[in-house]
Every structure is written in structure tokens, then in C-alpha cells.
Length: 280
Image (cartoon, helix red, strand yellow):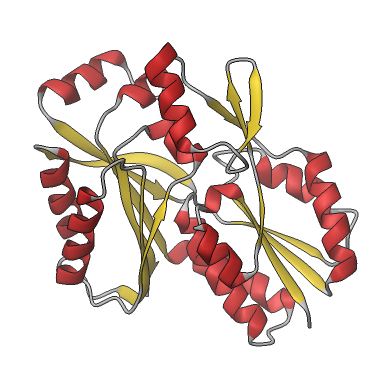
């Protein structure tokens, strides 16, 4: 069967991977004051960071609407035997709900709640492509993806709580305390929701080293096929430092480095970095 894999722009796959996998990315909306843009379509995290530095105003993101999904599903459902779309977790956005409503019109379109964000979705997208290329029927791919969603381990370490505090997701007191104590919190995705995990003390680089060690050292349940290092770092030094630590603590066959898109960037700000992989 000829199966097309699609995903929200929140999957944070690099342009090179998108071309290699031949997936279609459906962009969310980014709202900058009174102007609306599309994530990754002439608008990037750099625009978000510049706007915040200039105005002190955060950009917001908005879900893909039903009409957008209908247009894309309608076009692709005529070209392919089946379309499998992966969404950001329904607990983070109404994208999944909107995609499901749109898919009701097309019997060969399947919608999957990734229960994740960023390259936690990207991991699933890559698996979906591999399964489709192997000839697996779409119903079986969807069932397998539902199992795999529970095995994704996604987390990020954040340099500053300013963006979360400005967005109302963190109190001013907590943000001030983290700054004074030089704490870098780890944000984890569990059961489709975000929660705060460990807090690492010291500089961002020092905290990154501790974060990778904490996530990987001594683990016997790692799926070592691939790992993503996904970040919003303006400087490549922390990314390379983390790559070296991943090599030290995990025997991964493939290490993929990508920049986070507008959704992660608008909520977490610059110098956010995560490692994302499967458990066995």
C-alpha cells in the first residue's frame, strides 16, 4: 500500500529529515501581538526570541484548525491508499481533536495522539515511516504506534524560567528562587502531560552534563536504536557537550540533533535542551 505519514510542526524534525522521510508537516499558528504566522513557514524561534527581547511580550501558539486539516487530508487521501497523521498530545493542544473531526470525512485517514511533544513525536514519525515502507497495513501501524507512545522518554532542561513565568506556567517566586539558587529544572513528559522533574544546580553547561548522566547512566532499559538531542541553544557548545555525554553514557546507533520549533521555544525560551529516546 502507498501510505503517507503526516505530522504537526511540533514534531521538530529537521528539514533534512522531513525530506528524507518524505513526510508532510502541518504547521501550527504563531501569534505575535496582532500578527499571525505559521510555525516554520517563514517564521522561526529566532523571531520569537527577538520579539521577546524587544517588547517583553511572549508569542503564543494556536492549534491547526479543522479547515486546515480537512484541506490537507482531502488532498492526500486522494493521492494515497492511507494517510496516518501524528499529533502533539491532546493534553497540550486541541490539534488532535481538530484532526479527528476533520478525518471523519475520510475513511482512509488515521489520526494518532502521540501523547508527546517535540521529537518525542519525531521518534514516532520515524517509526511510522519505517513501518509504512516495510509494507505494514495502516491499521497495524496505528496499533503499533499506540504501543510505542508509552515507550517514549522525553524531557528538557531549561536555563531560565522567565518564559514559563511570563506565560503563567510558573510563579514569579519560583522563577526568582531558581535564579537565585542557580537551579535548572528538568521538564518531563509523562502520560501526555508535562511535569517538573529534578532540578540541577550550576551553570547551564554543568547542569546539562548532570542531566544527561541522570537520564542515561546505568540504564538497562534503553532502546539504543536512536536518540534525539533537541534544543533552542543559540550557541552550539552546550549541544556538542551533550552529544559527548550521550556517547559516554549510551551506546546509541544514531544520534540526531535538531532545533526545537516555535511551540517549545515560545514556552521555554532559549537554552532549552532535551534528550528524547525510546525505552525498551
